[in-house]
Length: 302
Image (tube, rainbow, N blue to C red):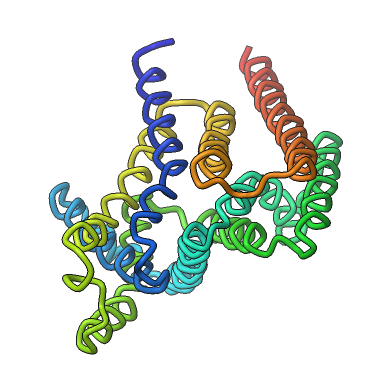
């Protein structure tokens, strides 16, 4: 493994580990309403990312991105979706639904495949079809266990799936993308914080110094893993990145069971076994597809 790939692996592991342990961060803010945490996350992510763009003199890229009406439409929709995703995740963590939140990110790759079939009219190969069938069985088992549809998991998976779909339609740098998305949400988020503070019920300065610091640092906690991910994606193969993505929900699941002591029954175990099998089949099919494509490309050049 060369230095570039080693660095890519390290950045990838750092990014997905950071996303995996994020519930620990939000748990420290449990006394703050999820809507207020979300508002601070948006505002301070905006401040942090704009600061980075100023340092690297890339601020012009925001203006360029927003000069296209199509981009504005897709980014506005993507902003709403990521806002829904962030709010649901924060609420789920602080309402003791960490296990279900992890399920959402396990099934996300398969939801993305399903969206590709429905929205983009892509065809499923045999392995992907089997993977989806296994995932449906797994989710069905968990649904029966809960006695309800796992709406938190589906909200997270669908919001992030559609978000990814929209991002594919607008090709922008990840840092610029986050800057533009938070720019769209910034006015509403800032207005909400000002309203809360003016009423004397805002979290800043009214709970504890630690809470204030954590809210102010939420932008760094949001943007840093994204920057690591971008650096990783530049250096390693898509197939490797595909396997690394399961680090995050696995850590979150472990936290839910062993740290936050959430319920995890035998039915949960069987449900997750089917989902893990689905992900293994899906990941292997992607790896084989990439290898086949590379082989065809090599032969065509020889």
